[in-house]
Image (cartoon, rainbow, N blue to C red; front, top):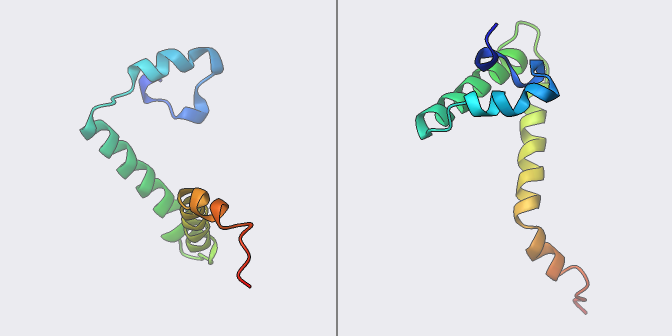
Length: 84
């Protein structure tokens, strides 16, 4: 199909700049992309007939990594401090 309708994983490395130029980076386009990604994730991991804890655990692990990344500077400052 057309380059603008391909998924990121289907784009070859040489076609990447042209694919990025064809993307819609307006706020509405970014919101639509996030919504499409969430729906894809939800359909693949959470809304399945024989689902397990994988979808929820991936979401929680991502949240833990993200919150650790946000708080890393604060944690790093207190790492070597002794409390006795």
